[in-house]
Amino acid sequence: MKLTLIVLLAVSCLDSFVVMMERGSSMRELKWAKGGCHALIFSIVNAAMLFLGMQLSRVVAACHWIGIDRLLSAVIFVGLATFLLMKVISRKRFEERLDLAFSYKKSLREAVFTGIDTIVLGCALGLIGEPILSTCALLSVLTFLTTYLALWIGYYLGAAYQRGMIFFSSLVYYAATLWILLPL
Image 1 (cartoon, rainbow, N blue to C red):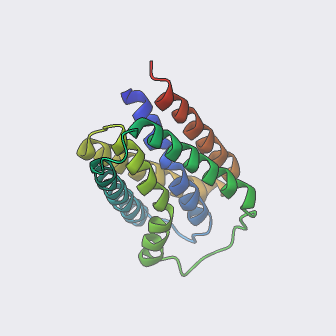
Image 2 (cartoon, rainbow, N blue to C red):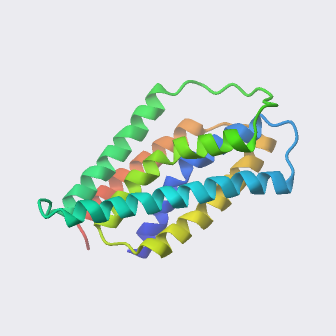
């Protein structure tokens, strides 16, 4: 069960990975500290979004009109997977251009927009009873590592294979739905 949680959290980082890979491919100069600051912004925002989502799940679970937490969690995973598939279908090809205006403020804005689905994931994980603090800490570490790595990959190799990565993450969410509905 913990391995599945780690996989789900890693997949939730793929959206941030794609965004930071695009940013890395459009930077003129990337330094270790600057990359670390951008990764830290994404890490903190994703952990805060997951925390918010898990707190929302407590509110939903407190309402006694919902007694089917696992089913609701599975529906949330299907919604996330479908959202990501629609994102892949509607996504246009990214053109790598030099972006001199990319700043920490823009990084924060992109982290918030890519973290919206993390709120929904947090709600689903909260409904199935995952511990809040350890899950948020794990997501924070995974997000920091993946976004930091993505900046450097984008900087040196460009921003290829974005659609495939998002498609893969939607498949993992569909598999998580089966994991929720058919526990072993």
